[in-house]
Image (cartoon, rainbow, N blue to C red; front, side, top):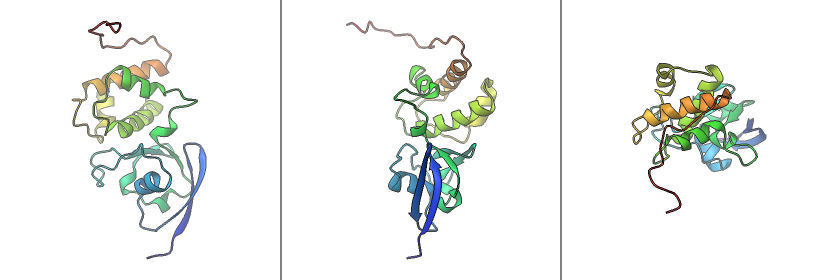
Length: 173
Protein backbone atom coordinates (compact mmCIF):
# COMPACT_ATOMS: atom_id res chain seq x y z
CA UNK A 1 0.00 0.00 0.00
CA UNK A 2 1.37 3.39 -0.93
CA UNK A 3 1.47 6.47 1.22
CA UNK A 4 -1.76 8.51 1.21
CA UNK A 5 -1.83 12.11 0.05
CA UNK A 6 -3.98 14.82 1.56
CA UNK A 7 -5.92 16.58 -1.18
CA UNK A 8 -7.86 19.79 -0.61
CA UNK A 9 -10.58 21.10 -2.91
CA UNK A 10 -13.93 22.84 -2.78
CA UNK A 11 -16.84 20.47 -3.32
CA UNK A 12 -20.18 22.10 -4.03
CA UNK A 13 -19.09 25.20 -2.16
CA UNK A 14 -17.62 23.38 0.85
CA UNK A 15 -13.91 23.17 1.61
CA UNK A 16 -12.98 19.51 1.60
CA UNK A 17 -9.81 17.68 2.67
CA UNK A 18 -9.46 13.99 1.92
CA UNK A 19 -6.65 11.45 2.28
CA UNK A 20 -6.32 9.32 -0.85
CA UNK A 21 -4.07 6.79 -2.48
CA UNK A 22 -2.08 8.46 -5.28
CA UNK A 23 -3.81 6.22 -7.85
CA UNK A 24 -7.39 6.81 -6.59
CA UNK A 25 -9.84 8.07 -9.19
CA UNK A 26 -11.87 11.17 -8.41
CA UNK A 27 -15.17 9.34 -9.02
CA UNK A 28 -14.34 6.91 -6.22
CA UNK A 29 -13.33 9.70 -3.85
CA UNK A 30 -16.53 11.62 -4.54
CA UNK A 31 -18.78 8.60 -4.06
CA UNK A 32 -17.01 6.65 -1.33
CA UNK A 33 -15.21 9.24 0.79
CA UNK A 34 -17.27 12.39 0.21
CA UNK A 35 -20.62 10.58 0.01
CA UNK A 36 -21.63 12.46 -3.15
CA UNK A 37 -23.19 9.63 -5.10
CA UNK A 38 -24.79 11.76 -7.83
CA UNK A 39 -21.97 11.17 -10.31
CA UNK A 40 -22.32 7.56 -11.43
CA UNK A 41 -19.71 4.97 -12.29
CA UNK A 42 -20.49 3.65 -15.74
CA UNK A 43 -17.81 2.63 -18.19
CA UNK A 44 -14.70 3.94 -16.36
CA UNK A 45 -13.21 4.74 -19.78
CA UNK A 46 -14.75 8.23 -20.45
CA UNK A 47 -17.20 6.87 -23.01
CA UNK A 48 -20.52 7.15 -21.18
CA UNK A 49 -20.27 10.47 -19.30
CA UNK A 50 -22.29 9.31 -16.27
CA UNK A 51 -19.46 10.52 -14.01
CA UNK A 52 -19.31 14.05 -15.46
CA UNK A 53 -18.63 16.83 -12.94
CA UNK A 54 -17.71 20.49 -13.37
CA UNK A 55 -14.15 21.31 -12.28
CA UNK A 56 -12.87 24.88 -12.41
CA UNK A 57 -15.39 25.75 -15.13
CA UNK A 58 -14.81 22.68 -17.31
CA UNK A 59 -16.76 19.46 -17.75
CA UNK A 60 -14.61 16.56 -16.60
CA UNK A 61 -15.27 12.84 -16.62
CA UNK A 62 -14.22 11.99 -13.10
CA UNK A 63 -13.65 8.30 -13.87
CA UNK A 64 -10.33 9.08 -15.53
CA UNK A 65 -9.04 11.85 -13.30
CA UNK A 66 -6.91 11.11 -10.29
CA UNK A 67 -8.09 12.75 -7.09
CA UNK A 68 -4.61 14.20 -6.51
CA UNK A 69 -5.09 16.16 -9.76
CA UNK A 70 -8.03 17.96 -8.12
CA UNK A 71 -5.80 19.72 -5.56
CA UNK A 72 -7.11 23.27 -5.10
CA UNK A 73 -9.97 22.74 -7.57
CA UNK A 74 -13.54 23.94 -7.38
CA UNK A 75 -15.72 20.88 -8.03
CA UNK A 76 -19.45 20.97 -8.75
CA UNK A 77 -21.53 17.80 -8.83
CA UNK A 78 -25.25 17.46 -9.45
CA UNK A 79 -25.77 17.68 -5.68
CA UNK A 80 -24.41 21.24 -5.76
CA UNK A 81 -26.92 22.54 -8.30
CA UNK A 82 -30.02 22.59 -6.09
CA UNK A 83 -30.00 25.49 -3.64
CA UNK A 84 -32.10 25.95 -0.51
CA UNK A 85 -34.14 22.83 -1.21
CA UNK A 86 -35.13 24.11 -4.67
CA UNK A 87 -34.16 22.29 -7.84
CA UNK A 88 -31.92 24.16 -10.25
CA UNK A 89 -33.68 25.29 -13.44
CA UNK A 90 -31.85 22.56 -15.37
CA UNK A 91 -32.96 19.82 -12.98
CA UNK A 92 -36.52 21.11 -13.15
CA UNK A 93 -36.43 21.27 -16.95
CA UNK A 94 -35.27 17.64 -17.18
CA UNK A 95 -38.21 16.69 -14.98
CA UNK A 96 -40.73 18.85 -16.86
CA UNK A 97 -39.63 17.67 -20.31
CA UNK A 98 -39.17 14.01 -19.36
CA UNK A 99 -35.47 14.25 -20.20
CA UNK A 100 -34.76 11.21 -18.08
CA UNK A 101 -36.01 7.68 -17.79
CA UNK A 102 -33.88 5.25 -15.81
CA UNK A 103 -31.84 8.18 -14.49
CA UNK A 104 -28.41 6.60 -14.76
CA UNK A 105 -27.02 9.16 -17.23
CA UNK A 106 -28.98 12.06 -15.74
CA UNK A 107 -26.41 13.47 -13.25
CA UNK A 108 -23.70 13.62 -15.92
CA UNK A 109 -26.12 14.92 -18.54
CA UNK A 110 -27.40 17.68 -16.24
CA UNK A 111 -23.89 18.65 -15.12
CA UNK A 112 -22.77 18.82 -18.76
CA UNK A 113 -25.86 20.91 -19.58
CA UNK A 114 -24.92 23.28 -16.75
CA UNK A 115 -21.51 23.89 -18.35
CA UNK A 116 -23.08 24.27 -21.82
CA UNK A 117 -25.49 26.95 -20.60
CA UNK A 118 -22.66 28.76 -18.81
CA UNK A 119 -20.77 28.92 -22.12
CA UNK A 120 -23.69 29.32 -24.55
CA UNK A 121 -26.82 30.66 -22.81
CA UNK A 122 -29.09 30.15 -25.84
CA UNK A 123 -27.71 27.14 -27.74
CA UNK A 124 -29.08 25.85 -31.02
CA UNK A 125 -30.17 22.23 -31.28
CA UNK A 126 -26.96 21.50 -33.17
CA UNK A 127 -24.87 23.03 -30.35
CA UNK A 128 -26.79 21.04 -27.75
CA UNK A 129 -26.20 17.80 -29.64
CA UNK A 130 -22.51 18.61 -29.97
CA UNK A 131 -22.10 19.41 -26.26
CA UNK A 132 -23.91 16.32 -24.98
CA UNK A 133 -22.29 13.94 -27.50
CA UNK A 134 -19.93 12.59 -24.83
CA UNK A 135 -22.81 11.65 -22.53
CA UNK A 136 -24.63 8.50 -23.53
CA UNK A 137 -28.27 7.74 -22.78
CA UNK A 138 -29.67 4.32 -23.53
CA UNK A 139 -33.31 5.12 -22.71
CA UNK A 140 -34.61 8.43 -24.02
CA UNK A 141 -33.58 8.74 -27.65
CA UNK A 142 -32.23 12.23 -26.76
CA UNK A 143 -35.24 14.21 -28.07
CA UNK A 144 -36.58 14.95 -24.60
CA UNK A 145 -33.08 15.71 -23.34
CA UNK A 146 -32.72 18.34 -26.07
CA UNK A 147 -36.14 19.76 -25.17
CA UNK A 148 -35.05 19.86 -21.51
CA UNK A 149 -31.88 21.78 -22.36
CA UNK A 150 -33.88 24.25 -24.46
CA UNK A 151 -36.43 24.61 -21.64
CA UNK A 152 -33.65 25.26 -19.12
CA UNK A 153 -32.01 27.82 -21.41
CA UNK A 154 -35.27 29.75 -21.76
CA UNK A 155 -35.93 29.57 -18.01
CA UNK A 156 -32.45 30.81 -17.14
CA UNK A 157 -32.90 33.70 -19.57
CA UNK A 158 -36.19 34.62 -17.86
CA UNK A 159 -38.37 33.73 -20.84
CA UNK A 160 -41.85 32.25 -20.46
CA UNK A 161 -41.62 28.47 -20.66
CA UNK A 162 -44.32 25.91 -21.20
CA UNK A 163 -43.64 22.21 -21.15
CA UNK A 164 -43.95 20.49 -24.50
CA UNK A 165 -45.73 17.58 -22.81
CA UNK A 166 -49.47 17.37 -22.35
CA UNK A 167 -51.08 15.68 -19.38
CA UNK A 168 -53.29 12.96 -20.86
CA UNK A 169 -55.29 12.12 -17.75
CA UNK A 170 -57.02 14.23 -15.16
CA UNK A 171 -54.82 14.07 -12.02
CA UNK A 172 -57.99 14.26 -9.87
CA UNK A 173 -59.11 10.82 -11.11
